[in-house]
Length: 96
Image (cartoon, rainbow, N blue to C red; front, side, top):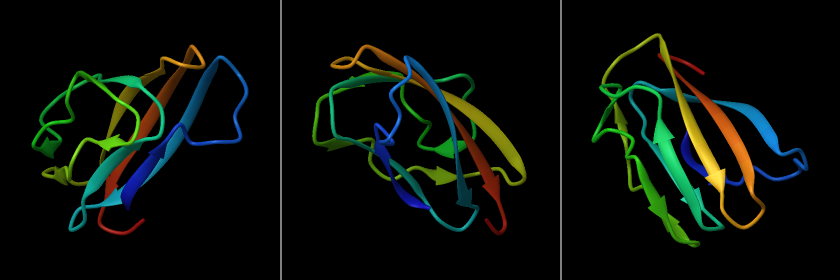
C-alpha cells in the first residue's frame, strides 16, 4: 500500500468513509496534506501502532508495519481546515 494521502480528495461531504488495503509484507503510512487529528479505534495491528495524535500539514505518521493478517481496523481522521470527519477502514491482507 505505502502512503495513504489525507484527505483522500474528491470528497465534499462532512463525513466520509473510505477503505485502504495493506499487504502483510508491506507498510502503511498516512501522509497529511492538511492539519489533522488521527485516532485508531483499536491498537495492536501495526508496529508501531497507529498513533492518536495531531499532525501538521506536510507530515506523515512514518512507516507502520502490519503484525496481523486477514483483519481490519478503523481509523478516525479529522481535517482541521475543512472541518470534515473521515473514517478509514484499513484491511490487512496477504494480497490486496
